[in-house]
Image 1 (cartoon, rainbow, N blue to C red):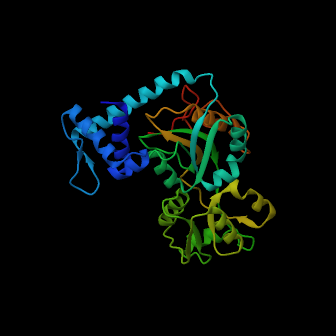
Image 2 (cartoon, rainbow, N blue to C red):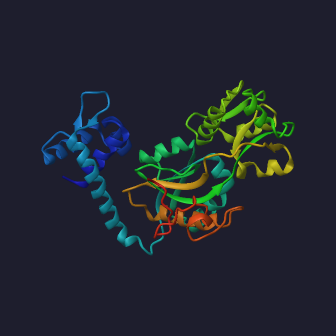
Image 3 (cartoon, helix red, strand yellow):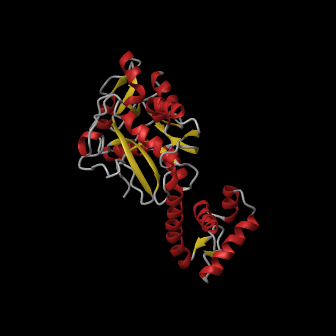
Length: 326
């Protein structure tokens, strides 16, 4: 048994099939099958139930998954022993929410590229749900999210800041338009949502359900920039991060609306896979992002707890990265 066999095994689990794992690893399907056969011979039992369209883990396969993750994590930690003091290099794949990229990460990305030219940096914008899925599947190294605290058993989180979310309308919208709609159950202006699965949409839909409001006219967008432009054109109300629309609010092309208090606290946070040691390139990005976040408008620096953008009572971890996964 070789560790590359374990890598293949975990790729099948994460990607949901032999063909998908072969494509991800750059192997032929026969090579993937040979790796699994070698593992099954070493274990002495089948690892996958191949009856369905997607192979499921047997009891032995489930046990091996946990052990394989531990073994590969140890291997990576051993390999990282010589990285200390070296300049980060290699590839770093980041998935980020569009609003976070535009409003917060610009200076971080520019300074990172300047400081670590040996790192091949790539960034993809998508919804927070899609980004998290990419990290869990191993397609992305780091996720940059704006959403309530990420709580996933397979993710670790570093909180960068607490961010205000606001309901907005066009310059012609009356400030109490949303409250009137919630009171009457009829939102005449309509509402512009982000796509399904986005934390913004989940928050608003939860509020509307509690208040018994069903918007008459609804539009969905994959881009917050498109939403902002459409709200400015008086096509409906929406719910956006204040950091993304501060200029428009100052200039009066968007108007913040009166709204009931929200139960959710929105945070900008970086997330990555547990049991997969961070590369030097990823650690350098997290450290730089945390340092730059202290300079963001409205972000209050601190040593842990309520003053650092973390939810009340949630301290920093000993290594400086605030842990939010549970």
